[in-house]
Amino acid sequence: MRWLEPKSHDQYKIREISDSLRIPPLISSILFDRGYTTRDEIKKFLYPSLSDLSDPFLLPGLERAVMRILTALKNREKIVLYGDYDVDGLSGTALLFLVLSRLGAELSYYIPNRQIEGYGLSISGIKKAKEENATLLITIDCGITNRNEVKYASSLGIDTIITDHHEPYGELPEAYAIINPKLPGAQPSCFHLAGVGVAFKLAQGLTRAIGLDDEEIYQHLDLVALGTVADIVPIVNENRILTKFGLRALERTSKPGLRALMQKAHIWGEEIATWKIVFILAPRLNSTGRMSEPRASFELLTTFDTAKAEQYADFLENENRRRKQLDEDTFRDAVEKIESNPKFGEEKIIIIHDANWHIGVIGIVASRIVEKYFKPTVLITTKTGIGKGSGRSVPGFHLLKAINSCGDYLIKFGGHKQAAGISIYPEKIDQFRRAMLEYAETFLPDSTLVPSLKIDALITPDDLNIELLEWLELFSPYGPENMRVVFLIENAPIIGEPQILKQEHIKFRIKSSKRAFDVIGFNMKEKLQTLVSQAPVHIAFIVEKNEWYYGMPDIELKLKDIKFGDWRKE
Image (tube, rainbow, N blue to C red; front, side, top):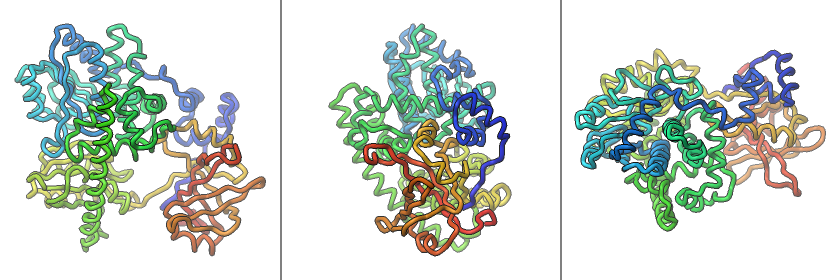
């Protein structure tokens, strides 16, 4: 793993801003390195406010969408919400469902079946809307590439409002209105909004248009944080504000389903950090769409019935257990296929397929494959006769652009820089694979396939204290483009004998001039022998709050990596 040092910055300017804001120069320096270089930028980062959110009507298409919804409300038209089956789509659909229901809308919802319909707007979903006499269909977290489907809806007399955040490719659908922060004219602060963030903007514009206070929709910030964090979008700009306040709303949510889900997961009453959404709540909510029908997850998010909330939470727990087992089986099978390929070491992209893989877990497994081999990965299942694929990438390689360059071999595709989905005829898989490998030879340099660790600051043990921890807590919530602050101590003064914990982890101590600190390295037992025998030792770590220590909060260091000798020459 390469270590990337922080850049050098204007120390006079850093000191000037530190003095004016009364913050430590170390904190200012870290923020400078992350691109926050003015007094206003730093102040808004450390102390975000909901008042910093941009006017929703600055999003192109939003005003037109709001006026169409108001007409539908006035004329008692039937509105169908068509949401994606992942947590982002589910939470965005739930938010609009709750807001529009509160406004008295004639309303229903449709979440497609991942295994049968796949991602995006489907003809079967549109037919269902027509059967319900709907005249307005609103997509959430999908629709930006569904030109034919939108045209079909129009032919049935159904207007379509698209709310999406996926990257548009080619000609846009002829929808009544399109709200997508990645379209020209959208304000930069909204560029990274998740699907639920776009839905929130629409709801905010709608409530303002009828004269309601923003507090009417702030009660749903718990859903916004849920979908934003689960979709692994950058936690910067407006996403950071929505997530910061959304996490606090989630901790005290009055939604029976979310409370029941957190109780089942044993995190109700705790502080909710982003990792608890990613690793605890999101997998449970995603499990229904992966394993069966996503309806239960949507109903859990919107029910006001405590007994039903308990039932849905139990169902999600069971589905998630089934998903975990399938995940493990598929991962083992995928690793066997990869390592039996004699050309694996030469190929820059992993593309494998199987007729028995469950479509609901291939995305999760693709992420695990990337983590294990650090190569862009696309897994394809042909279980239903048509190939369904899910891909994940590494930093620095735009997966969707790569897939788009091979689009002639695909039925359809969509997604982001780091994650994408495809549909493909089985007989085209080998051609698609060869085309992707050729693209990688040109656009995926070897250096991109080496994992790196960004160092935020070089410090000494004497810089470690509770005050530093308190300042670092202002950096949360964490996520892409706002990761935990990584420190480096060179020539770390280790004291005592390093230990092995639970056969997998290591623990040792370093000392400052006043005290000692525990350092924990998870799954780093292979470093023990070198740690004991070599010097100097350099440690890269994050600072975390420890359990209460003799009645006082304490800190411990979570190891990210260790290097020995002259690490800059590696």
